Amino acid sequence: MASSDLEKQLANLSPAKRALLERKRRESSAAPVLRRIEDRSTARLSFAQQRFWLIHQLDPNSYLYNVPRLVRLSGTLDRAALEASLNEIIRRHEALRTTFRMQNAHPVQVIAPELRIQVPAEQVAPRNGTSPLDSAIDLALETYQLPFDLAGG
Image (cartoon, rainbow, N blue to C red; front, side, top):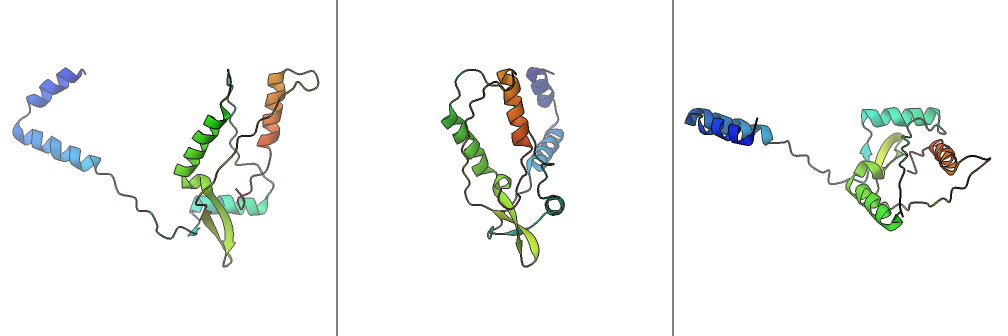
């Protein structure tokens, strides 16, 4: 439906229907307010986090929850811009700065006030007669299989 058609339909509504529509619009746009916890030094684990923690206790060398992604870029990479954008995402999302530790015999989550990463640069040379792309994929697979340390991040 074109916006002009919608405007005509809205103009033809009775005042009572227009008031009802406006009230419904206001009610539906009122999203619940999420409040920040003031003392954010530690917090109990959510149920999903408890599952991650338990699996990590059973197999601390697992890479089960790693989520690998490969992106093929062309042109010159501006590493400083990439690092700045990734660090901004990390700054905005506490989940990316959260680690787990034991406190009073219970696992808790700890949100680091700040975390900055550096993007490593790897020079990929063909290995064993493979193409540079195959070598890059092999390197990515090796990296993907590194265990993730829930306590250290």
